Image 1 (cartoon, rainbow, N blue to C red):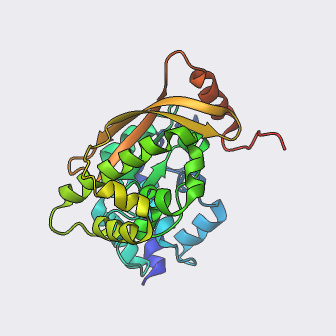
Image 2: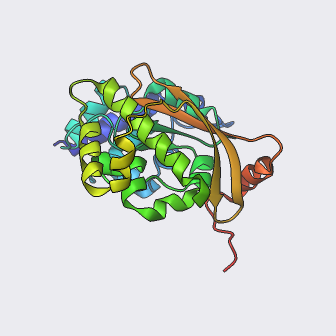
Image 3: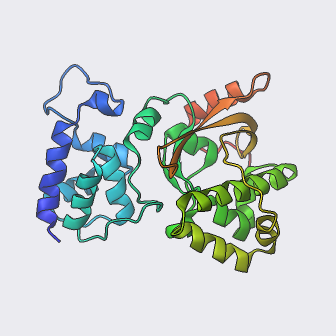
Length: 280
C-alpha cells in the first residue's frame, strides 16, 4: 500500500481529462488543464474534502469509492488495477459493484443526460447510474458479490418488488429467470458468481426453483415496464438494452411510452431529482 503514490497517480490522471470528456462545460476560465478536484468528487459521489485527502495521501478509499473514482477519471483497466494495488485493495472480480465499466458504455451513458440510463452486469448488478436513473429507480441494491444483484433481492427481499405493480410481478419473475439462465450458459463451464447466485436462490426461494425448472431462456433486450415512483406515480417506460461485446455488461435506458404521462413525469424527476414529494 502506498497512499502517497496513489494520490499522485490520481492527480496525474485528473490533469489529463478535459471537461468535455466527461460531459462538463469547459467554462470561460480554468486554472488547471484538466478537471478540478470538486468536479472529480462530484462525478464520483464523494465530498470535496474527502477527495482532497485522497490526493494528499491521507485517506484510504473503499473498493466502491475507488471504483467510482476510476470511472470518473476514465481509467483504463490497467490503470484501475494499479490504483487498487496502490490503495492496498484486492482487484475487484468482474461482475461486482466495483467492476470496471466498459468504456464505450460509460461514454454513451454520459451522453444520455436527459434520459434515465444505467450500466448493469449480466447478473443485474448496477455499476453506475446517471442522476435521472437514480431519481426514477432509486439507488442500487446494496451488497457485495452476487448479493448485490437485483435478481437475488427480487427473490429474497419482497420489498424490492414494490418498484413494480403487483400484477406485473409474474412477468418480471419470468423475465429475470430466463435472462439469468442465458447468462449462466453464456459464461460457460466456470460461471463464477452466476453459479453461486443460482445455487443460493435454489436453496432459499421455492418460487425461483419452480421457474428455474421450466428451463425458459430469453435474453432481455427490450421490455415495457410500469415503474412505481413514490412521488410522481406509475411511470410507463420502454427499457432498451445495449450489450458489451462479451455480454457481461449492458447499458439500459428508459424512454417514455407514447400516449402516456411519462414524458411529463420524467421531466418533473429531472427537476426534483431524488427529493421525495409524496404527501405525508
